Image (tube, rainbow, N blue to C red; front, top):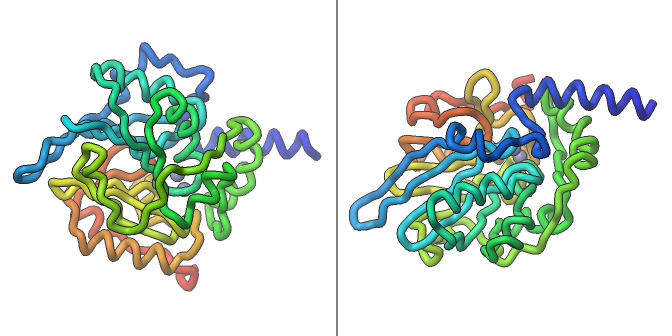
Length: 272
Ligand SMILES: [Zn+2]
Ligand SMILES: [Zn+2]
């Protein structure tokens, strides 16, 4: 029975994450340059911010680089610290000041403890997801469609990846300002996927939105994993009200445009 479960889990894992390479097999030196996506933003008198998107397992993490310091938004699966910090070295920098964790799922905080150890950067998360980070858990209370398989394989993923928990240095709420860490950005609380799920608003109407939006064959409002489906709908509206021009999700290959965001509709249980 246990072997059947393991085989089933492996098949599901392969099917859901076809583009993932396990950390152990990752060839950082060869692949790093090709995987980085770079964007930049600035507004008025604020410093320009370079945005580097890096694939860390199935998760996209974002390194924000400004003259006053660097901030990392999410850290991906466990074992990706080497890849992320290689980029920091390539940039000739050693001033990673803050790691912002979008929410308490291990595919987003997996390399956090290792990066903190190696850089001394402070770790920040919303108050409502701090316990999941500290206990290295990944709560998935409500699932549907592909999310059902995700929940089934979660114990297998945790067994393989062994995510490491840690106590955050900073617990934030909606509106938390990152400028004292060198980057002109502001936290936006977008609950629903998890209670403390957050995004980041940057100058130039750029938004990092983690798992509020999911991207499989095409971008859509999170419809697989939820703590509260109605809150996801409210968060999507809150993001639309901000009217960002570019929206970077936590999974997927590209950003969404404003018109793509405006076309998204939330999934409700009553739709089923
Ligand atoms: Zn998540
Ligand atoms: Zn995720």
